[in-house]
Each structure stands twice: as structure tokens, then as C-alpha cells.
Length: 485
Image (tube, rainbow, N blue to C red; front, top):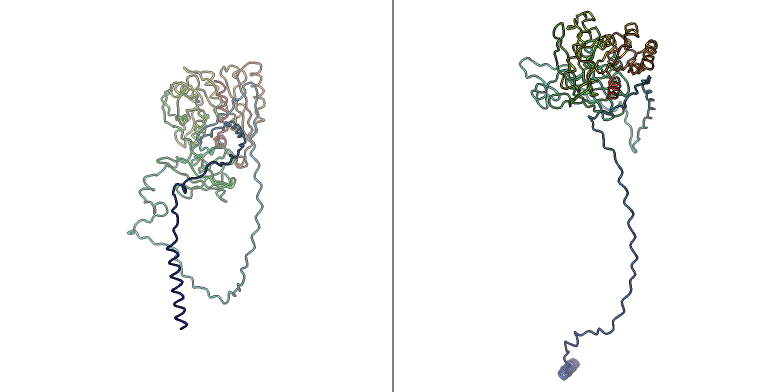
């Protein structure tokens, strides 16, 4: 009965709820009233005060930046003064102080490692190594290095350079000059290297085809103080890698490719062969007929000097004395050399590559008396100037007397150098008197040779050539000749 009463009560309440829901009528909503929005009450806008923008700072004025100097550019030296005697200081820079050795680091001890006695470690049996390699005649030719990697026909045969390509003038970006001198046919017997920055003169020893080591002096190969590795571009040597104990970093000097030609010029005693050296490019150059005296000198030393001149935009014409066509020759009379010098001057001044009125004479050591005689008795072309380089190879007695010097009517640069410049004091006094009182166009430069011990230790009749194959004398001559323009 209890369950029946609960069921009847539930049905009664459900019936009442349904009846009540049917009697209620809800009023429908008006969509327009729902969508309308009252906009009469609008809040006043908030005033925003924006600060005035600051004026931008004025742009900085562009600074003038100097253009970088190209690697092949030649810096023009300042012109020399014409009415004073200049004394130069050519002492080498002090040697760098040796760096203190760094202390060796202490060995690191790893934790939890127990050292084993060497007695307990079994040594592996070493295999025997052959002490030679046998190549039979029927076997293929063995090649190593670049020939093995790229082929013998490409690297060993196609690009094969003569040893004469190694010599020449090489310059760096900081106007440093490295001279490679071909002195193989002299008492040195090797290529020599001169560094204008450190003023060192050393010998080279060939260890591979393009690799040379630098010795400690002119006469020693060991201990090695550096190396030179020549680099090629197409069919000529372009630069080399220089590594020395004097520099912390390696350098890559670029070769100055001067133009060299073999020429013949007429003389009263027949034609003579000469070597014309021109700057790397351009025309309308100033130049000199280079006279080294009535003696036989190796052509490699002469070319080293003329290349130094052409590297400074100064053309040159050089020829050997009569009788010096071969190594065992003996020079003939000096009067014949004077005649050949006058004829060479006439031929040289007529070349199209030379600037009109800018061809002169250069006397080197024993060539000074010859140049002075040729300047006093010229041929068809008068020299525009003369350069007289007085060194240890010339005696003061060989220079003409004061009367002959007073008859010179061309500008003369007297470049006095060597180990003993004091012996030239009487001549310097005469030249100064002729310049100051006689109004002779003489310029006097005293450049004592205070080079490194490498140069000072060199001895012999040809050492003056090795000392002078630097850019220093060429730099002075170009400066003086430019002042004449």
C-alpha cells in the first residue's frame, strides 16, 4: 500500500504542474525595442596632450677617408734639395729583444686513475720497416706531391719556369722592397735576398723546385732563418711567400715585372749589344745610360741594379765593356768604353719610350770617370744630367781634377757611399766650392754604409754591387731627377 500511495502522489503532482504551465501565456518580445540603444548619455572625451617632438640631432659631417694604396703603387719620394750637402743615416734598426720562454704547463692529473707500472705493460712487437724502395726499369715512373695529385704533364711539364724568373724586385703594400739577386755565377754561387726593411742580405738554398731556405749570412746555409716559396700565375712568377725569424707573420711580396729587351746600337768600332730596361708600363720615361766601368761584371748583378731603377720608373740602358763577352774575358782600353758610352747616349736619347731631354748618364764606381769624360765631350745628344755614385771600388785619385769638374755644364748628383766616406772629404770640399762659388749645378749626398753585419761581413771586389742592388740609391736618384723637371 505504501508504494501505491507514493505512485499516486507523484502522478498527482505531475498533473498539477502540466495544467499550470498550460494556463500561463507569456507576452512576445518586440525585436525593435531589443535592438534600439540609448545614445543620449555620452561621456565627454578625455583630452590627450601630446608632447612636442624633439628635433633630431644634426647628422655628423662625413669624414674624408684616405683611399687605400694599391699593392702595385709606387710612393713618390720627396725631391732632394739642390743647394745643400745631405748626409743620410743608413743604420739598421735595432734587433728585436728575444721573447721570454713561456713556462711549460703542469701535467693534468686525472682523478681515479691508477698508474700502471711499465713492467706490467706488454710492449707490442714492432714490425720491421724497409730502408729502401726498389723501382725497376720496367715499372711506371714514381711521382710525388703535386705531380702525383694533378698529373705530371700538367704541373711538371706545362708550367716549367727558368731559374732566371726567380730574380727581380718584389714589393709589399707598405712599400717594402725585397730584392732577389742572381749571383750564381759569382763567388757567392747562389741567389741572394735583400730585405730593405731589416737591411739583411742572405743567401738562398734550393730545397725543392720552387722552395728555398734562407741562410744566416752570405756564406752559410744553416741554421735556417726563413724560407721563400715562389708562386706562379699563368706563365710567369708573380709573387712568393716570405717567412723569416725577423717577422711574426708571413708576407706575400708581388713581383715588379719590368720590361727588358736586347738592343744593338752603332758605334765607330762596330755594333754593340745592350740591354734596355723599362718600367712595367707606360711611355715618356726619364732614363740613364748605366756605366759600371771598364771591368767584367756578371750580368745578373747588373740586371739586379737596372731592375731596381726600372721599379722606380727610371729606364736604363746597360752594356758590357769590350772584351767581357765571356767569363774569361779581359776588358780593353778605357778610351773605347768612353766612345761606346757617347754612342749609347745618342742611341738611348732617340728611343720613343724616352722623354725628350730626360736622358742622362749614371756612373757606378769605376764608371764615374768614364761618365764624366763622356759628359764633357758629348756626341749628337747632350746628356740632361749625370749621376756619379762613388763607393769603395773607386779611388779618389781616379776622379778628374777640379778644372775638369768646373767645365761640366750639366746637373750632377754626387752620391757618396761606402764603408769609408771620410776619404772623399777633399773631393766634397771641391764640389761644395764649385757649387757655392762657381755656381755649378751639383747636388751632394753622403750616404755612409751602416748596414747590417751581413753586408759588412761581405768582402771582395764585387760586394759593392750586392750592396747597391737595393732600392735606396734608385729612390734618391728618382727624387733628384724629378726635382729637375
